[in-house]
Length: 194
Ligand SMILES: Cc1cc2nc3c(=O)[nH]c(=O)nc-3n(C[C@H](O)[C@H](O)[C@H](O)COP(=O)(O)O)c2cc1C
Image 1 (cartoon, rainbow, N blue to C red):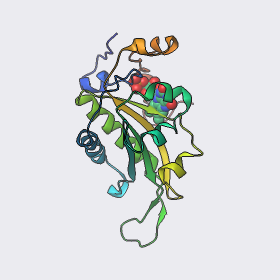
Image 2 (image 1 turned 180 degrees about the vertical axis):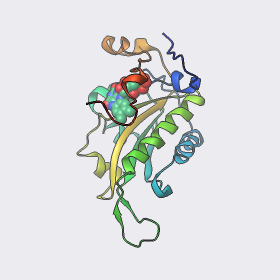
Image 3 (image 1 turned 135 degrees about the vertical axis):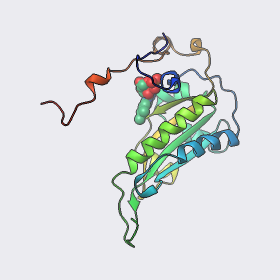
């Protein structure tokens, strides 16, 4: 079922969705960096650009380490993606006019904007993305080199859509664009309702 709205929303927003069936075909580093480029144009507080991307292409030296961070539920299908990316956010900012680092209170929000732009650029290039919070949160900082400074925000599988018959039956049933709540349930003039 194609998604629809009666409002004048760019088709890009309706047409992007998160499949789990990927075809395993390769993408090159230049394509991946086009996605990071799009992500990097996201707005951020003080233009601090707190997002960082740790990536692996299918089969390269870091692939197994990144795939190994995903929880089994995700690894089962994301292993056929063309690239895996973890989005990290810098927890510290030195605001303009200061020489003191302080907590970057908007880092996660800003990294979320970058992920959205990456996903939409991928869609524009005929690629699908699927965000995943289902990874080993205890091990990820060490494996990704995050140290104390960066938070690991999300993992992303990127690739070309594959045949949904490649998925377990339960996931085949979910391999479709999902609906959204009506805007009227989400937007309020002046104040949230009591
Ligand atoms: C931060 C984040 C975490 C997610 N974690 C998972 C996950 O671990 N596994 C999964 O299958 N889908 C995951 N998803 C996908 C969402 O379920 C999906 O984006 C949502 O249902 C909306 O569907 P759509 O992206 O197709 O529009 C995640 C999405 C986001 C943005």
